Image 1 (cartoon, rainbow, N blue to C red):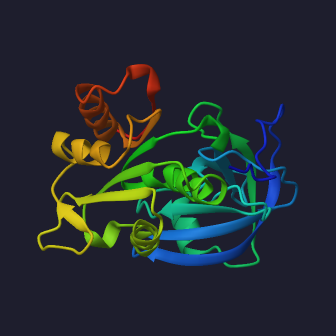
Image 2 (tube, helix red, strand yellow):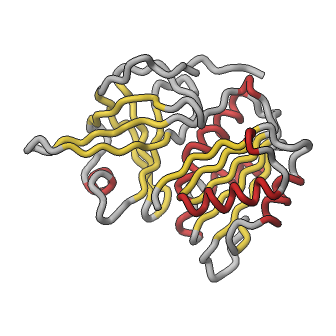
Length: 253
């Protein structure tokens, strides 16, 4: 097991700084992935997030928090997956205006609970609903770099096939990484899709994920919208996973 060099503690004081957009890719029709290079960056821990601030010409400001999807890999960059919210203030700007070379105000990294370091060990159970996959993707990618021998199962749930961010990468990891198992489910997809089942997360899916691990998970991470996290947490507790070993992060209504 190795620990990569840019794992960093929470900074004592958060300061706004400029970050340059160095790459933009479309992950789904409504999700773009932005790779940012902050001007002054001392690393982060998988699972953390950053704040983004936009300032209009009249001085009006809007702030949003976004989880980091990339691994702490020593590159000095971070990756944010931003879902387009039609009536939002920040995400339409990213989707319609931001180009490679632009600078964005950001601060971070932020968060000291919903994080994972390789020395904490496993097995790991990761449960994601929709864009809740983003911080878990950071953990998954970091684990592959720093401790690929740690058994890990990921349950991810999306409404439709078209919503499934990082689908190709997850399928590839499931095929190539011997200690990683993927359990994808699509809650509103009318037709069968390779690599996923149809339906919502339930106890049977959780039992299958647990059966793929050689031992009960040391830590279970759950991230998604409030109803998803509530349901997934209930299934996890019903399956006998201790409450104290569950870390949950939720958003929205």
